[in-house]
Amino acid sequence: MRLLAIACLAATLLGACTPAPVSEPVVCANGFAPTGKPVTMGSESSIDLVKAIDVEWAKLDMEAMRRFYSDTCRFEWNDGDQFQGFDAFAAKLAQDTLDYSWTMMWAFAVDDDQDEPGDWVHAGFDEVGTLNGDTVETAFIEEWYFVLEGQVHAYSNSKRLLP
Image (cartoon, helix red, strand yellow):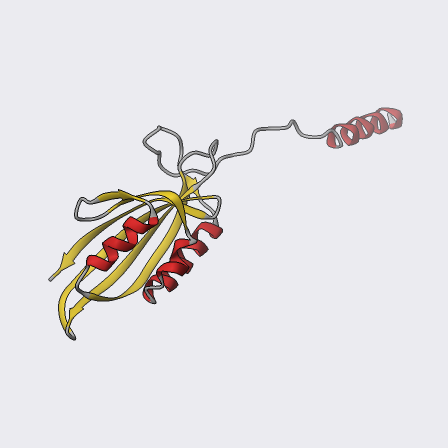
C-alpha cells in the first residue's frame, strides 16, 4: 500500500513538472481594418512623434517640422486639397489668413496590420481661429498620421466648425 502511494505521488510530481504545450500568443485586438485584419494598439514612440510635431507647429517652425515628414509624404486636407511633399504642406499653411491656437485633446496609435511596420496616430484638437484679434471660427480638428520609421508618410485632417 505504501509502495502504491509513493508511485502515485511520483507520477503526480512528474506530471506537474512537464512543461505546458506551447501556444500561439494571443493578439489583443479590437475592431478591424479595411484589409479585414485586426486592429491593435500602436507604439508610444508614434504618439511622441505627433506630440513633437504639435510643439513645432504651434511655433510655425517649418524647418523643425520638416524633419518629421518623409520626402514623399502624402497630405489630404479638410478642404479636399491633396498634395505630396513637405514644401507643398508648408505652402498650404502659408496660404491661410487666420491665426490659430489649439489644444491637443487626445492622441492614440493603432496598428492596422501587425505583419507590416507602421502605426496610425489619431489626434483630436479644439481650435480657435482669429483675424486681427477677433475670433472668426472655433472648430474641432481630427488628424491621422501614418508613422513609419520615425517619420510621417501620410497625413489627413478633418475640420468640424462649432457654433
